[in-house]
Image 1 (cartoon, helix red, strand yellow):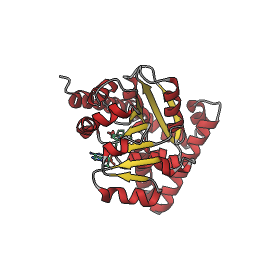
Image 2 (image 1 turned 90 degrees about the vertical axis):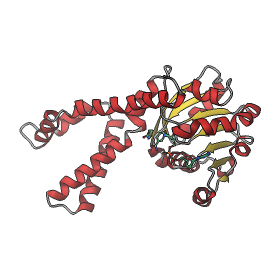
Image 3 (image 1 turned 60 degrees about the horizontal axis):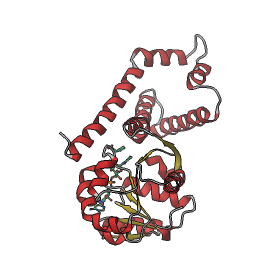
Image 4 (image 1 turned 180 degrees about the vertical axis):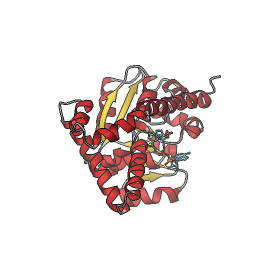
Length: 275
Ligand SMILES: NC(=O)C1=CN([C@@H]2O[C@H](COP(=O)(O)OP(=O)(O)OC[C@H]3O[C@@H](n4cnc5c(N)ncnc54)[C@H](O)[C@@H]3O)[C@@H](O)[C@H]2O)C=CC1
Ligand SMILES: O=C(O)[C@@H]1CCC=N1
């Protein structure tokens, strides 16, 4: 495992990964997070007991792994300002930014870096993250293992050999917690219209999703079979499923996920300066 990990940025996603790492036994004293605004760092410093710094260069100079966790729109200025310290230190770089490709980030950091692109998701905070990873050719086997170990501390890891597939990973897992949260909102709203107290509808919907996900993960049956097992012939579930199929849920999901991946591609073009 890495000796010292520096997170550039201490927002939603960095906090989720750091929280998960600490819960899995990683020492808070081996983690630094940065932000230009110390007021943003105070809560993570106090809650998680990690080091914090408002100076990215100082934080990079202690690290053997640097996780880039700022918004894609400011990645260029953040990377270019860290270029000299990254070139001196030569840490393993892990970017969690949506869209931005490995060569673009490597160029902003002066080139020649071992760089892993990672698409994580926020359930990393509770140890149920799902991350897709891609390594550039400079990443050693040992560094690949470090990246795997780091992200497996907060969930499951899937490596892809083709960097373009990270846009599909963004659609399937990076952005996907939001799809399920939307489903919980919709189920709660419908449950309330049918007379249930909101808190009851929410608890039942969330527990059902947890149960379904756990069954799907543990069972040797595929999701289609598990679905069929709930659908008694002439019963209630087949009415609900017929309605969802008639409403083209599959097509809607595909269109939503295509829009997600397309936006990742657009962001890569917009932010790298590629025409
Ligand atoms: N939120 C999510 O579910 C996911 C986000 N991502 C990626 O993670 C990255 C971060 O996203 P969020 O955590 O949601 O954003 P956020 O806005 O919550 O966090 C960004 C952090 O960057 C800090 N920051 C701003 N300027 C900085 C600078 N010059 N130096 C150091 N830190 C600076 C801010 O203070 C803030 O703590 C993005 O690139 C996003 O594409 C990837 C997967 C999932
Ligand atoms: O919405 C976004 O752009 C980020 C990347 C994946 C999840 N959240």
